Image 1 (spheres, rainbow, N blue to C red):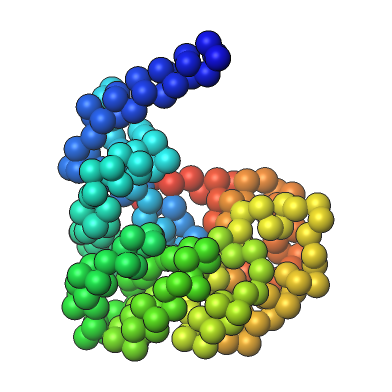
Image 2 (image 1 turned 90 degrees about the vertical axis):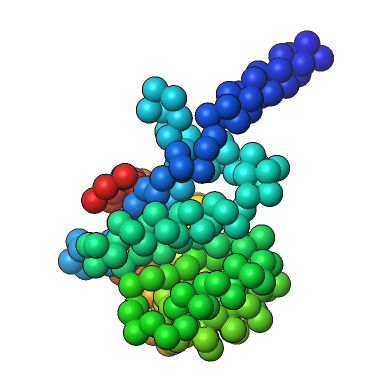
Length: 242
């Protein structure tokens, strides 16, 4: 009990420390490239939120997202990361994507704002990423975004298998399917299931991206399946500037 009590006190202390440092203007985008593994060139960038703390300490989203939710600032954070990323990427003609959460996709005003921003855009530079876990409940939103914003790049993240929801999403002309980082590392990997997933993506001209490539061995496994795009620290770390 004493150990649990100490752990709780430490957690509360850390949360208070982050809370005292949290200001929206201190949240900045870090850019991690998705690489074309065939030519080692950047395909596009994923924009990841980071909190610049005291003494230039960098907090990951896992450190402060609970605080954002507690303060009901989810939409504020999404707007902020969008604007900061757009400002940086537009000047450099960089293809870029932001992550949309469950709460973002449930927020009708945020979805309407996103459509307003890109409904008449001819550019294919901007994109969104949504998790496979929330795909089923948000297929109508995804369908609306595709109808209203035909040039919007849409990727589904953290995919481990070909679900019925993903099959329906593939018919909406997804830009990419990003495989779960643990999928190709799993020793019990069902290779035939993975090949079927890759084949379904290729049949709809959807790019397949392997995430969390952190070693040469993982990269070798990825390329052995004919996967042409990858992301991870072995290829390139997220950075504040590129």
